[in-house]
Length: 249
Image (tube, rainbow, N blue to C red):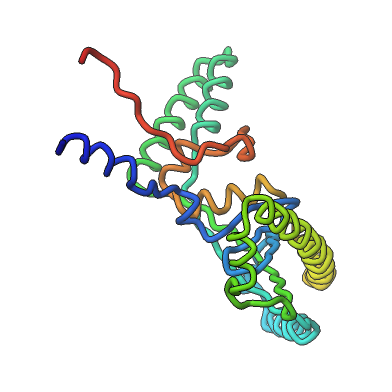
């Protein structure tokens, strides 16, 4: 009896998935819907090194930057992400050059350089830094309250009413998404236009880029060896994977 009870308890245990720990619901057409009801879009921007500028140039940059901020009527978040450099592709490139070389001196130089790069990365964590701008949208008219008693009654009436309610919510969500997409796209274009005053060309993040940004944020070291390069994240549909043990009983 105890063993049967134990097995039943194991089945009743709630399985916590990775999705529950992530801050977003979905990523679609470059728009990220957060669990707090916000919609955001991201754009990558190049950095400017003002340390190498003359004082007059620095003053121009400061004035231009001030004008950019004053011209915006929406909030902008700045995000910087550091990423560990994956040199495997570069080492493979050097290996190809070494194999194609017919000059012994050049071959030895490539071998020495490859060993130098591997030792350098081994002893020091080489990182790159990328800058992003985040624009957000939230419909202030949207009801922020939790589910009301009337909506709960709909579920109590039966599965048919619950299905009708789910379909209505899906239509409502689709309309809200389209509104958020239109607003965020317009805000991104406004930012992109303003950034051209700095001579900076910002790029919009698509679904794959946004997935990669979140993936690296939560898996900084693992992402170096298990990157999303060449992988479509939309193919990841399994919420929970359990290791299946093999062998005799």
